[in-house]
Image 1 (cartoon, rainbow, N blue to C red):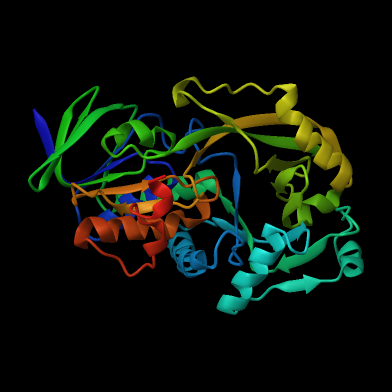
Image 2 (cartoon, rainbow, N blue to C red):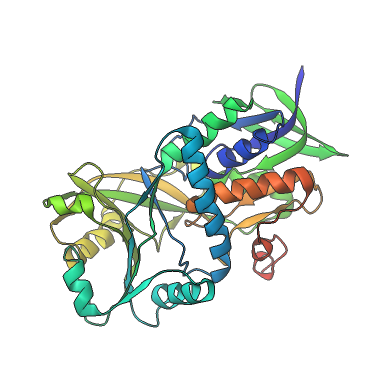
Length: 376
């Protein structure tokens, strides 16, 4: 027998869970389908923490989305009755003309954001846990911080369920199709039909959009936790360093014993997300260990533990948020390129807008499917 509903959401990681919540809170009968469990560790929305920041070096057009994202995270905290965001500030360091520093300052100027352009001597005095290079420029964003990633996913799913959404886990999508004004989803357990479909499948997006030949590349990424020997790490800021060897970022200590950090650059192509190599090899750990030894004080250069995740990359590293060109009742959220999680609250709202009314007030034009980079 075929089950019917108003809307189906495929994938309940960061973006799918948020889309399901925003659809359900508007009164739709929503079905969310997830092949693993709630807040699982098999995709891209896990690992305790994600940085959130407004002075966005990737492109100033993201800033209006971030301003709305902050508002929605606060709303979700209130409705869920739990803390999801920690405001501890963010240190950016790197060459003055590099992508990180120049891009962050450009976004701050364009949108009137509060950031501090700090002289190197002052940075060394204010942030003694870090060793800055002599040619570093340093910017501090006081309103930045981090999100508790699994708690954010769980809160969106729980709040969606309270609004009447049905959550199915451990169910794998085999195919979807659209005809007229309806969509059909076939899983390994049942067939479902609805008026709308939102696909936010992360690293599994490419096969689900085979008809569009999306130029998506999935990268294997490792997260690391290193032991600390100074209590000050519990009161530290988040950080992002641009170095000749790559981009590195990290967080204050949550447990008083370790700090989490990773390399944002690099990564190996993943052929099949289900068979992702989750082991840590010397080539994985070496760049982060060198960064720790050169830059971080009172932190062991040897990892304590690690976790694996995936970046789903577009050619220009910008997201895809749009309706399917042939099936307007199908909405796409994909290619979040390793910097998307902080946006999940607002992108979830935009996916719901597009699904219900075909348009959104969220300024997403630069993330459209028909932009030149998506058709190399």
